[in-house]
Image 1 (cartoon, rainbow, N blue to C red):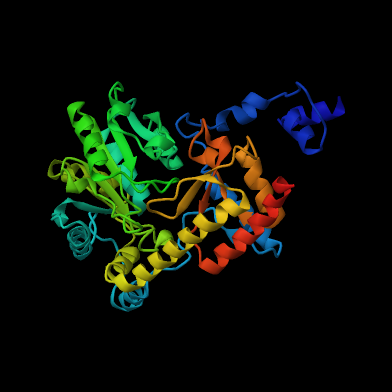
Image 2: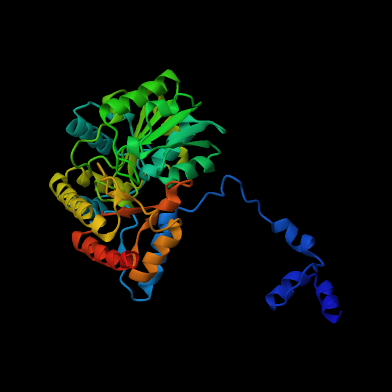
Length: 422
């Protein structure tokens, strides 16, 4: 009672004081509402997004590295190379010539013109630079698209498995996600009949896709776009892995119609993940609305990254060397994965991922990947990140690293899988 009197005199909460001293108190709190009621902060429902699990895996790998262990990173979709040489030279020169202040919200005009040139070089299509909006990463483009095109409660269809942040950005903007369960028969890509009976305000596709690396051919892409047009469904094409293709060239939605929204990035083909720079191509009628959103949400994309991108767009030879590494890594995995025990996969058409069925070995890919990281120091990503319903039986392996690192990682994975060959 002496303690109680002291706490009352000083207007303290017994519950929290005794917790600090390590006691267990069930229901004693003299002044909790008075002391703490006015500082309890609201936590929004739309802010309760799921973690981006690959980033959690990356952090777990970092913690192991801190202990002095070498970790082979096959989890994150990040090129093992840095920004191209010309990009870095542009930055060095730019830092001495410019204060690197704000740019206009739509992006440096010269950069938008060079991006437009890229569409002619890759697809032989003419894109007006006025339709190109430079953003802080492709994530900025998704935020612009989702806020500029949809209202609270609208529904956007996405393929499952698919890039996890689609779902979480949509949720944070109070939009609904319709997960379209794709199948291996259709290369884990949505097809026109998948949306026939769905009431969608928008459809977002990715080709090449993450996590499967599969691509839509022109007929398949055209079929989806026509189905969306008939249902007045907004069509958004994620093309951030364009340029990283193997046997056939990726098709841009802009080759079929201008009535779509196309998103791309400097992260993957251009090897500039940490520079956070992307772009979106919009129809003419949407330019001003998207510009107003960009002004208020971002002001502009990082000036220094835009300068670097000017050099990256001229780095064809160096970037094609990177593509040669991905091609060699892909061939190595096609050969070695079945020998290790990973036999259920489809070789990717593009990007730098293998999406592998591991149901013969586990029904919990989270624990499976955790064990691989802890036992043999190789980081890979559980499929649950990409498919909440079926992903506990799959994993994603990235081969964007150097070939020597990939060989070392495969050797370690072989050691881990030896227990299943007994």
